[in-house]
Image 1: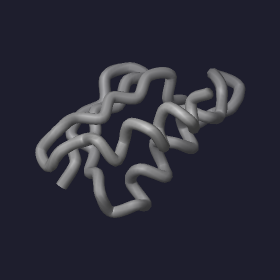
Image 2: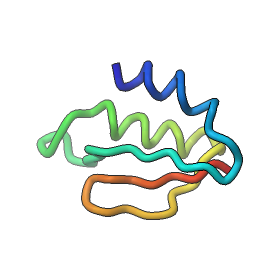
Image 3: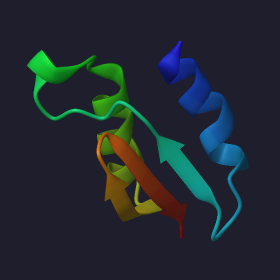
Image 4: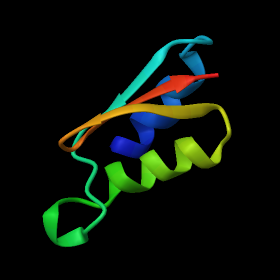
Length: 63
């Protein structure tokens, strides 16, 4: 479900817009893998940069 949300919505984020991903945990013992993998994929796409992190919430901005 999380990947489907990302694939459906990330292309709709306009330049300067925000993509917020919650429950991003680097350590699998702390939480599910999908949010962390989506976070990494968004950064690797080159379309987003990280602006801020607060706990497990990540704020990415579309370039």
